[in-house]
Image 1 (cartoon, rainbow over the protein chains, first blue to last red):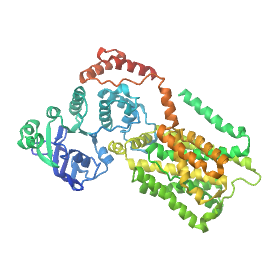
Image 2: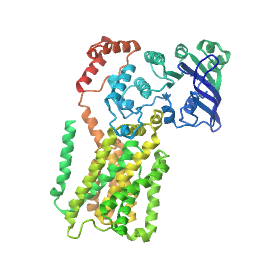
Image 3: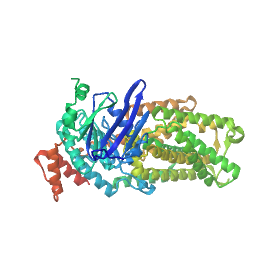
Image 4: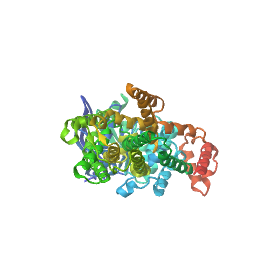
Length: 251
Length: 362
């Protein structure tokens, strides 16, 4: 049921998803399919509904109508912590960390507890702290583990947010503008991370305006305009599609 | 760690020695009032400090605990301490639906709901005279028999309040370091973000709220047994709830001992101003000014402000310079070798030294 004709597995998908705010229809009957195990990109001009689409899918806001599914399971309108537990992690457009908690505490928030006893136990267990350190060193901020998150730079906060999402060990990672507001060296680092993690089996869904990054990184690109998909396909196809050029570049 | 332990020992010794150092029963009774405030403020801080939901109406739960305890003792004649605990449990059960209703809203709306709760209870307890005694008040039977004189009562209640405070502090401390506490603090910092990381935020908030109501009710019940008289206008007063908030903010809501410290300062100040300017209501003006000063100059409270001052004299925090992907790969390669984490790499020299100094601290 989650296979397409070409044999690609469909992870996250939506059918006729709509959401309007007052008179503005931000997402307008969007039917989209993302490929599981691949790096997917979602692009489109500002105000085309990408972030609202993200928020609807991850349960931050409830869609007015339509369906969202993940690996065939209905996740429409579920609370965001349930969607997170189903295996979808996300970052935010304006990077969000827990400012007055240390970098290590930020990481430990994402640890799942299934029993009361686990919940009442000290947060700093050796195994979890070690795993957090490993992830922090992977993104390159392990030397900051005792700093408060509000004291580190914006780029480092972005890396911390990414590491925090990874701490929850999601299968699918949704990144909302990972390259927004960071310098080229850091963009390069984030791209390397995405490639490595994808090679380890993580699925990515990236909203991004940096076209070089999108085209070099992704396997599958979905283009949004006015709240719905206007085009999809591999980067080479999307890049030359006249509808995309018109909507996105205004040519 | 050692200095913290020593500090706690000194604090505990000071609290335990207070009754024998107090010059007269009046000062001792002020001590009891302060300890009662400390219990209430610490109990408030289970919600305020962990989740950041500022309830101005926690007098609801201390008042319900007080009346619950008193009515149980009067009507069933059970042991007053059992009545106090039953009162606390009853309020905890009541706090579940109240929490479900009020924790749906955040920020100012939550504050207003909490105030509305106190005002409703005030009217109910004033009007329902045949049960609560209404505005005439309710006399609470004493838990100790007639042979125990006033000063002796004060001393016993001072220690009882201190014991209750110790239990509340212990539970707060345990939550603070637990996974549950980490989730609660994440809610305080950014609730939506916490939920997107998989924290079931509503259940967490509700649990903290119920624990807070339970301890607040125990504090109210113990106060009722000590003071021996309840009047709705003082039990369900916005002022009592505001004191809990003021004390906690003053001391520092993110610190274990913040509310206790705030209770000592505010409690002493209130009693001092009442004593000196009792007829003029000047204590209310003074409290208002104090709250203004705290919000403007020490929004985090005294304990964080002082510890930040001390931190200035410590070695500075790690560098926040960023490294490129290549440098990072290089770092990780060297770090994977034995003892290589301290090997200096010219490109990342400053960071390596930071690691070294952190290693020493650990």
